Amino acid sequence: MTQWLYQIRIKVTEELSEVLRSAANISKVSELHIIAQKNGTRMVCTFDAFLNYCEEAELNGKEDYPLYNWTKQTISNPKKVSKHLKSFAFYKENDQVYDQVLADALFEDLKPLLKLGKIEELKKIDSNPKNNPQPPSLE
Image (cartoon, rainbow, N blue to C red):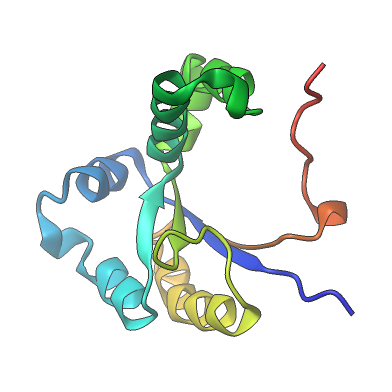
């Protein structure tokens, strides 16, 4: 039986995103940081991850980065930029996906913030290709 890996993602307001990305006014995000630290994770803005991927590809040779063109188009589209600036994933060290035990613990810890309206969306994503859009064709 295949063991899928998981990722927890949240969507926040534009204002909260700015605070999370700048680490300014930490009191506004302390609950999120406490939950991340408690579970040995860190929050990564999806837009920033995409930007870093493109920068790394441009430094090391785009031919070794199969999603470069798609990612570059995404971070160049204002509508998509707005969406991805408000999206954050929880990483375990540098791992974007992790076991279900950790994902379930994070999800449960974040549910109260969703109910209180402190975050706008909470998702647990699994690595099963049937449940997720696949990367664009490389042709």
